[in-house]
Amino acid sequence: MSGRQYEERRVEFRILGPTELLVDGVPVPLTAPKLRTVLVALLLSRGRVVSDASLSELLWGPLPPATMAAQLYTYISRLRRSCEPGLDVLRGLRGYRLDIGAAGFDLHCFQRAAERGRQSLRDGRYATAAGQLASALALWRGPALADVTESLAVAELPRLEESRLSVQEDRIEADLALGRHACVLTELMGLVAEHPVRESLRGQLMKALYRVGRPADALRVYEEGRRLLRGELGIDPGAVLRDIHRAVLLENLPEPVSRAPVAVHAPEAKEPRPAGDAVVTDDLWGGLVPAMLPMDVGDFTGRTDELAETLATLRGQRDGRRGVMLTGAAGIGKSALAIHAGYACRPDFSQGQLYIDLREQDGGPKDPVDVLGGFLRALLPGRHELPATLDERVQLYRSLLAQRRVLVVLDNASADWQVRPLLPSGDSSHAVVTSRCPMPSLEGIHAVRLGRPDEPAARALLAGVVGGRRVADEPGPAARVVELCDRLPLALRVCADRLRNHPDWRVADLVDRLMCEESRLDLLCEGSLDVRARLLTSVMELDPPSRDAFRALSRGDSAPFTTAEAAARLGVSPRRAQVLLDALVASWLLEAVPADDGRSVHRFPPLVALLVREQPHQG
Image (cartoon, rainbow, N blue to C red; front, side):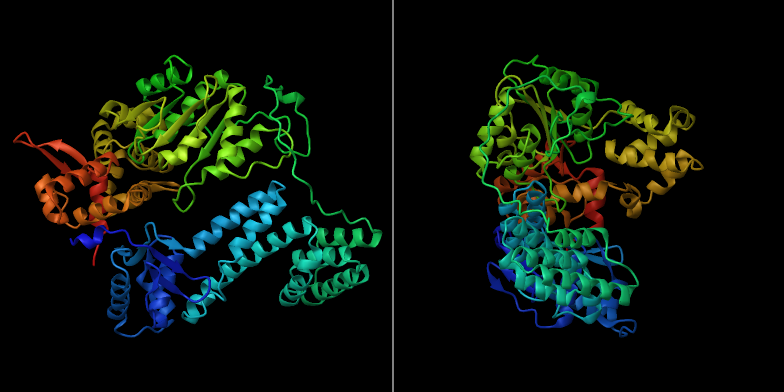
């Protein structure tokens, strides 16, 4: 592999307007509509495999050419060459999927900015919401999907346009709350003309007209909408639009909710109010003690030593430690242990339990500024204008927790910069952090490493879900299931769920299905419990040099290899190869095992090896 492939390159994908692919800011020519169609179809699949049949339908409709497979392969090859090594188009089961890694994608940026704006709108921070939602809309550079095939545009454009219009509605709602009725009036007139049966837009236009002194026009807009809905759809306006109409008629439409910032004063720490005395206020958190922990695992099994070590730290039995860091491979059970420990020590943290999954839905890390906003709104009664900067939010957050005894659970952390602002200071509040990678730079945190359970513990986990009698009746097949799952708790839980959902299966029947290596990872997926997805996330969380090294090493067979053999595959010095291998071992994607001659060799763990074999990294 050339050294060029270890250089970090900035790749950007844009589809909110003309389709664009940029590498280090330079546009890559995408002159053929079918080439753009393949790229956009793979981008919109969000990392899932798009079958050859689906791509063919999008490119040629119901009558593909005889050379369909060859032409499709040509388009894929051209995409790979366009920005190698920043783009990975991977061959899956009868299809392709796109791995964009750390590349930018304007649709993802739009969705994240829109969600932040909507959260601000829900929280009553209208000025902030208006700015955030306007920033999201600014990512649109024109009509989307105008330069791809009609089949793809017909399939995907309605969803994209609905998302854009919904954000536009939310931004207008924030502007109306701030009293900017005259500013949005012309925009609303155009939107209502374009979407005449969309009642939410018609209601916003009525509010704007009434507030600028045109109540008669507001009533006329309602009457036009009523006739249109009755004539075209045979229905009357909905309750919300009728309420706005009634308020205009009675001249009692609520005033805009524009308010000056409110100074924040931290309340005194108080004992939690009994649930029966809860007070209902305008603030959703009024009278409530934060209790954010997800549901506990009812059949939690094993981890006796690790649980005791975690609870001892959280209960202050280890001087100077303000929290616990649970580290281990993907699917090893870190989150389950953290949540189970949180429930076990709830009486020790009666003034609240805060929880956040620090991973976005697209796999990226959540911004600690946004996380602190959510925590502060839960900790502070009433509505307040929160500080804008990270430093100010951290200071307020730590001051609040210094007066209380609160447990903070930070799940799926990616790096120390994300965790550090969220850790409580002082002796009263403590934290549990879960991450695939250790973070030794975090001061005062006790590290607990989770390895694979031994064979009896793994079998107990299986029996805890399926039932002890069923496992005891087939001890040999049960042991084989444990072996084929590499004793990984997530894989074992999926297998246990499959057996529980198929009471007619013997354990031996499940073994027969697991024996097929080509479909084993498909079998180890049940709803959100997906071993393949967790492993792929581990790969994507690697830094670029380590990710490139993993891909290069996975191009060979899955047999163990020495550091010298790895250096030859990577095209780097043995010393540099050792650094990269150590990083992959720390990320649980490689294992260092002793060889017969006493030296250490590296190998892919069994389930990672299956992933490597089914994901040929071509080009």
